[in-house]
Image (cartoon, rainbow, N blue to C red; front, side, top):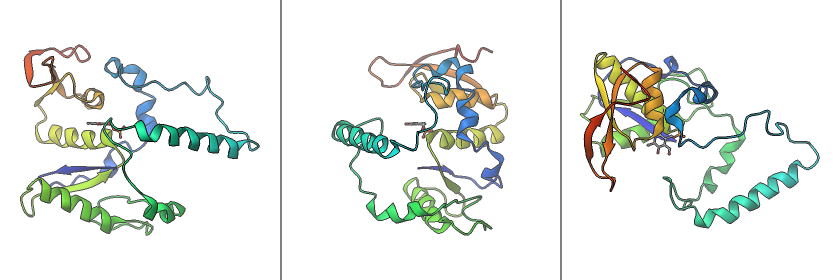
Amino acid sequence: MRASFSSWHHSTSRTEFPQSPTAFSSLAHRFPTCQNESRTPSPTQVEVSLPIVGRRQRLDALHERLDALRPRNIGYPCNQDFDYEDLFPFLSYSINNVGDPFGSSNYRLNTQDFEREVVTEFARMTHAPANGWWGYVTAGGTEGNMYGLYVARELFPDGICYFSEDTHYSVAKILRLQHTRNIMLKSQPNGDGLQRPSRNPAHPP
Ligand SMILES: Cc1ncc(COP(=O)(O)O)c(C=O)c1O
């Protein structure tokens, strides 16, 4: 989970955003900037449903494969040094923090009190002005980037977004989806700083 966090007040609810990850993945092939995104086989290339017989064996094999990879998976951008065992019992519930964590929800299986604590901690870490911030926990990095860029576009409809060529590819996708003018900047070969602006070929003027 990622926290999306904005240091100004506004009344936008997350329900205005496309919620379905599949809505994005089905568009992915239209975005030439997504070349570093790993490709998954299309449903026609894989056997979609697991046969009932053999399901246990397949899950055991998956478990074994992940366990073997675990000690060497130390980056991008997470490692495996965590223990979520305390959370296992909660996998038995369909928990959903629908809506604004600072509002109310008619879906009672929620953890919005925890969500409020998380965003409050982010507000503290980023020195957000007291009583001048809002945030929510997203399901992933793309949505966090999307929310930030959406708020930026609402505040500055004619603004131009500058981003480096090493910025996560989700940013180029989002900018295109929301029609934000943007310019991609070249990175230094060592990854530091930025060189002269270059036009984003994925988003010609
Ligand atoms: C900076 C950044 N943005 C976006 C993402 C995409 O995250 P997700 O696949 O959770 O949407 C990642 C993933 O590692 C990331 O590091």
